[in-house]
Image 1 (cartoon, one colour):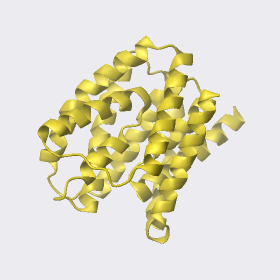
Image 2: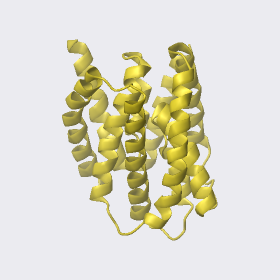
Image 3: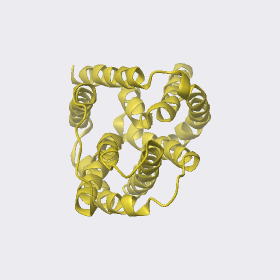
Image 4: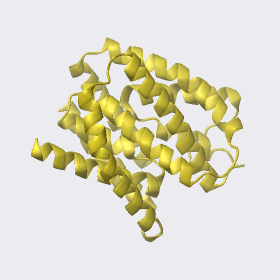
Length: 239
């Protein structure tokens, strides 16, 4: 148990640094590491709680104005996607879900490493579809940032700060949908809440460190490092 808590502390400290540097990473890092120690039935709802907390804090810090017209179609699609993701979790057993997670992490990492400059058309229809797909993967594996980031960065009307605000706000509300879905499905437990309370202080310290060193690091290399790390974890799940 002692090693387990040290492991948690390190994971969530590092996961807390990531969103202040890159705009994503809490769930990515956590879902790449926690399943080596915890069953997915515990890790998935736990990471949903922690990721939602982190994105809520980042959204408050970077609030830029009224972005509701951009977020609304994403949230509409996300509500549907989260519901579908919950059904997906119910249908797959733990072993098969681990394989699916490994495949997803490998594809996600390879995309982040090698496919740059792609964009999506923006608008209500595309936003709703993007939200649906992202909500599905958010509910299934807590990883919904990449697709929304791709969609948000394709909007030429938004600044970098507004994109970060849009992403964090969207991910916060989608995280709330996901947490409610886990609760309704009976996946929340006292054990998960204890883990979340223990992880929270280390997450907050990580967020503070990330904000402090933001201007001193090469963001491109940090993102590449995260993707390589996720690729290695995905391969390990498949072995």
